Image (cartoon, rainbow, N blue to C red; front, side, top):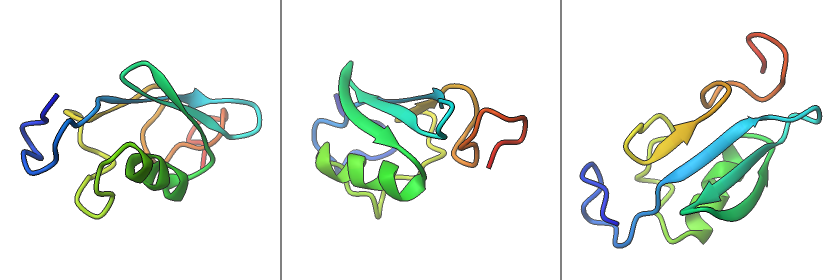
Length: 83
């Protein structure tokens, strides 16, 4: 699926980043396929790269591409405000 905000990238996958677990990891999926567990933004960028996206172009706050559940890109723990 091509993402309107990034038409130059072929076959962009909708990315879902699940809420943090007790260890601060967030499960990352693309088109329902598990990409792994991220422990920070650098891990998310690596998963995006492996999924064929250019992490230098993709914004982690792009709601057309990334659905954050349980907090946005600044939340990496289960505690309120969770960094």
